Length: 335
Ligand code: ADP
Image 1 (cartoon, rainbow, N blue to C red):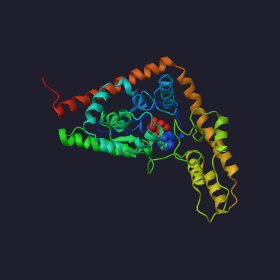
Image 2 (cartoon, rainbow, N blue to C red):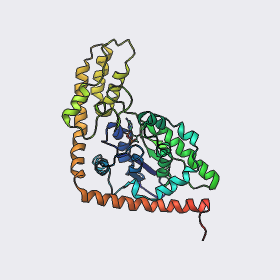
Image 3 (cartoon, rainbow, N blue to C red):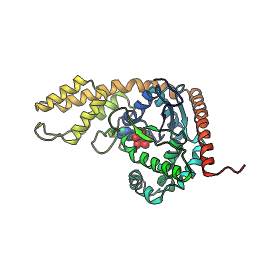
Image 4 (cartoon, rainbow, N blue to C red):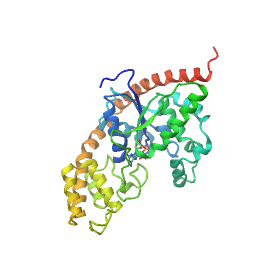
């Protein structure tokens, strides 16, 4: 498909709060890479979002470099997309402020991710955490994007983005199209953690998450320790931990390998040790080339600086065009 002016616009981002993992890859990055050939794409490192939970910023620079390097190592081409840092696009802050006037405290307090973070960081329940979905809406609406490749955990935030943009359009006039969460598959993905409790995540649950930077040995070890069950009664419903393992296999193993383990599960002869060994080896095959490529990019500071500058330039051009429309629609134009 040819990219053109009438093509949908794509926007998404990843926070530089730690190491990227299989959840980030399959929930977000894999779609980014495919979308870059079809659409006009804006992908950013959400460093301002990271500040909602980071109180210590010493690691920020290294984490931003890592996220950029891992994005590129996964196949993102900075010449095809705008790959930038959120904090380099100053227009984000203005739109964030304006959208805050269209977001109600009650709805923000009810957001699932806010409630989860309050539990995790009870000592740091700041207003930025509460308005996290507003900042995310600003990132998306700044480019008037309609497709947002994200994992299942972001579904509610996208619904909020639509609420804010619809309120803006209703109050001030049509500026924003509706944005929707996107995945090339049938539904949004949630990559489960290896211990069966929740999802793989950058900051929590590190031994149950497979990172794109994990060594081969560490990957094999983590998968070996993944939770299974003791029973192999094929008549009983499959336990959640085994469902999770099969779901993880679907991400990295060949169809005939998965079929083999499904058959042995059905016949009650499955050996979970063998399944985990196979899964671990297939994960190593998948991750090790990405890890090696990312490492070499991460060490090239000059190249990363060039990428960030070029990305910010492209993103600010689109952001400035939107902000002209926003200011006009509101009436913030006095001469
Ligand atoms: P994290 O939750 O690991 O800190 P972010 O909040 O920065 O990650 O999210 C970056 C992208 O990765 C988002 O699109 C998010 O939906 C996706 N994502 C994160 N974890 C998972 C997961 N376990 N499964 C699927 N997608 C995920």
